[in-house]
Image 1 (spheres, rainbow, N blue to C red):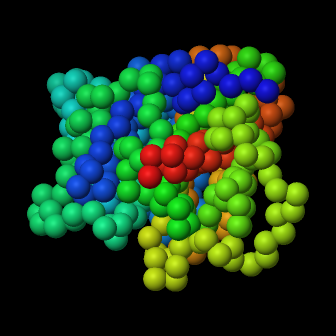
Image 2: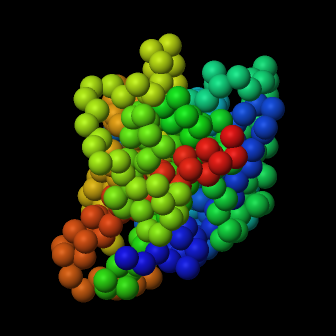
Amino acid sequence: MKPGPKNSIADVAGIKVGNASDPLAKTGVTVLLPDAPLRAAVDVRGGGPGTRETDALALDTLVDRIDALTLAGGSVYGLAAADEVAAVLGARGQGFGLIPGVPVSPIVPAAILYDLANGGEKGWGEEPPYRRLAREALEAASDDVSLGAVGAGTGATAGDHPGGLGTASFLSSEGYTVAALAAVNSFGSPYVPGTDSFWAAPFEIGDEFGGRGMPERAGAAGFPPDTKAAALARQNTSLIVVATDADLSAADLKPLAVMAQDGLARAVRPAHGPTDGDIVFAVSTCTKEVPQPLMTLTELGSIAGDVVARACARGAFAAEEKS
């Protein structure tokens, strides 16, 4: 079992991540910025998603590549982060274009989580901070990916514990890299009830989230006691990006995203509920040929679920250490 050298989504060559946080507002933005457009698909679960341009990723649409992705706090206000990224990339001439001399259209899907009621200063009136944060995140994009209460994970919570931004990677038996980036803001808890052990412990590599292992029994039934209280039940959503260098079609990336959703269910309980809006983007740099797509996709999908579980636990662990 071998992660990439950075154990992050930046192990997929050509992908950078930028984070920006507003500590007073307890919110932030994460931008995924590729060196070249990424092929992409998306899978949406739960009852409370907030997205932009996910319809553009349907298999029957005109484009199958994206120029960037934004993840943000702020609920509906956070969708403005993608406006800023699109404006900056468009000014650089990056985007989809058909007619010479006409501005290009950067394809920047986005997803948001709910952190409006986390105690931060949200009295921004008509000027929410998300465009500013998006520009800061774009300028900060690098292959050094921070963990914990940063970027879109700045004000996140996981059950009644700190949530945060996590990442992890894995090298497949065929030499493909699969990696995940997760902003964990779940109704469910990442911890086995009554312990500090993570539900994702069976998938841990080394001691990447503390090496705490699993208790002898983990037999909780129904709601674990450390989920969010009923008053907070609408304040959720976990946002995930799974990336690979395998040259998968958009039709293959869709089931990769579906399989990757299982990783969230391995990492937090409960998951995909009516008060969550869990979203997985699956993207590929398309740099490594796939001679046997069916078998390779099956393996990569299995890996993706484990990588997502690890990324979620790493995000919560890093946020826990800093809280």
